[in-house]
Amino acid sequence: MDFGAFIQNLLNGLAIGSVYAIFALGYTLVFSILGIINFAQGAVFTLGAYFTYTLVVGQFGGTGLLAGLTLFSGTSPFSGNPWSFGLATLIGAVLAGVVAVIVERLAFRPMRARGADPLLALVSSLGVSLVIVNLIQLLVGAEIYTFPADAYGQVRPALSFQIGDRTVVIRTVQIIIFAVSMVMLALLGYVIGRTKVGKALRAVAENPGTASLLGISVDRFVLITFFLSGFLGGLAGTLVGTAFGVAGPYFGITYGLKGLAVIVLGGLGSIPGAVLGGLVIGLAEAFVPADYSAYKDAVAFALLFVILLVRPQGLLGKAAIQKV
Image (cartoon, rainbow, N blue to C red; front, side):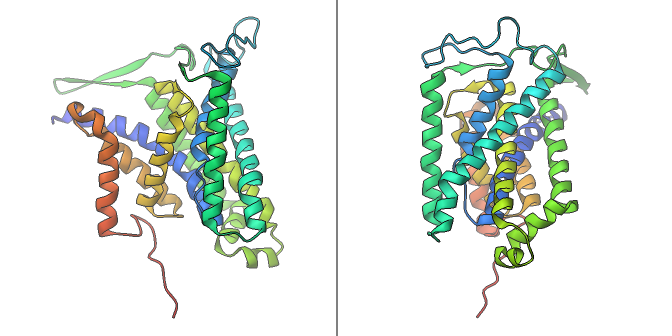
C-alpha cells in the first residue's frame, strides 16, 4: 500500500470510527449506571435517522401506512442550508432521546422495581427493540431513503488533494461526520467530568445506594442517562444516514452489534475505552482490501476476539477485583 492509499483509508476509518464511538457511548452510559446492555439502542439509532429524514424531506413513498403523506406544502424548512439541517438533526436526536426514556420506563424500570435479574431486563429491551423496528416498517415500509444532496447546504461533494502521485479524495460528508462526532465526544467528556450532573452520574454509577443517601435522585439520573444514550444513538443514526442512506428499519441492528463490539473491545463501562474501541474498529474496517470488503464485519469481530484473548477486560477496562 502506498502512502496516498494509507492516508485515504486512514481518513475513511476515522470518519466511520468516530460514529461507532458516539453510538457505543450510549451503551456505555447505560451499562455504567445499571450494569446491563440496552439492546433497544440499535432501534433508537434507526429512529434518529427517520426522525431527521421526516423533518428534512417530509414525505415517504413505498408501501408503509405513511406512503404518500406530505408534511409540507412546499420545500421543507429544514433543508437547503446547513443551519436548518443542523436544527433538524438536533430535533431528531432529542426525539430519539425521548424514545429512549420511554424504553426505560417500559422495559427497565418495572424490572428494576421488582429486583429482577439483569438478564430479564436485557430480554425485555430486546423485545421493545423488535416492536420499534416492526412499527417503523409498518409505517414507512422497508425501502431505502436517501437525504437530499444539498442537506448540508451548497458544499462541494468531495475534497481532493495530492500526495505524491496519488490523488486522495474524501467526501465532504465524512469530514462533517468526523467533526460533529469529535465535538459531541468533547461535550460529553466535559459534561461527565466537569459539571454537577456529570458528578452525580458518576456517583450513581459508583454506588446507587450511597448516592441516594447523599440526596441524589437515582431514578432521575437514570432517566438522564437514557436520554443522553438515546440522543447519542439518534445523532449517530442521522450521521450514518446522510453518508449511506437510511437502509430500512433494520439498518440499526448491524450498528447495534458493532456498538457492542466497540464497548467490549474498549472495556465495559469505560468512556475513553468506547472512543478508542470505535476508532480501532473503524480503522480496521477501512484497511480491509477492496477485494475483501464483504468481510469487513468479520475482520472487526476477529480483531475483537484476538484482543480479548490477550486482554479480557478490553483495551482500557479494569480487571475485576474479587474480594475474599
